[in-house]
Image (cartoon, rainbow, N blue to C red):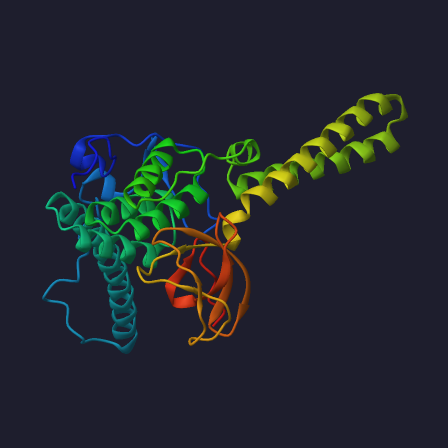
Amino acid sequence: MKTPVHLRTFSTVIGINRRPSGGPDNSLSGRAQRTGGRWKISLHQGQEPQGSPPVAFGHPANKLSGPPNAIVSLTLRSGRILAVAAWLLVGHAQAATLDDANRAFAAGHYHESALDCQSVLAQNGYSAPVLFDLGNSFYREGDYAEAILAYERARWLSPHDPDIAANLQLARKQAGLPVPEPSASEKFARFLSASGWAWLGSGAWTLLCLSLLARTILPPSRSLCSFTAFAGVLVLFTAVAAMVVSSTPLRQAVVIDKNASALISPFPAAQAAFSPAPGEILTVQKIYNDFLFVKDASGHAGWISQTQIVPIIPQRDNG
């Protein structure tokens, strides 16, 4: 099956410039950095990083001889140089991983490209651009369930990015899944990311507190202070409602096992209740040992093994 022509992927491969869509979000412990309207990621730019000038490790004439103070000074200086060199080597290794992902994708080695993207995410944390490229690699490889998972995570970090939304719909269609139409509340909640709504709510709370304080201290300005306090309350409740709607992915997971089966009870030998399709999104309601009680969009419910689904929002490792 041919890949749709309008599938957007690495800009260096098909010449598409990513459009910035809002500020960076760190809700998934990730960093989405941009410079000059473009994502600051070597995977997109296809350029070798500009490293620092080479570090001089000393002239051959320098020997461990002379007074003890001189030897100690030379030892400390060598230690600093080695530390800087190690830092440069780590940065170069990271850049090489990004470049390897770009070259692998251009050469059609999509599985290798996906592994390199996952390595970048493991090193730097989650970010919408790298998750977007990871989804593209899985899409081209034909693993639509993993592509949907990557796109869903990218959309949670950057909910109003049209490229992510378009490719998510393509992946759903290729997986044979329906493309749900978002409700009005979901569309409104995606106007900002979860962290964006949190910042807006914090600002509204601050405005409310300052307005109430000013109303007490400045009696002549009570009318103005009452108006600003009312505006703060309105914005605060709006932000809280939007955060509740946008927090839905916290309870959702994507089916990645092609033979997944939800059971009527949390035991391996139990009878099957329904069989979710790969890439389908399930809502997790409770947990029992290694099983999760889930529901699909049609209302079917059952217990499914944790190995057959992956949460959209990864759980923090407390260990």
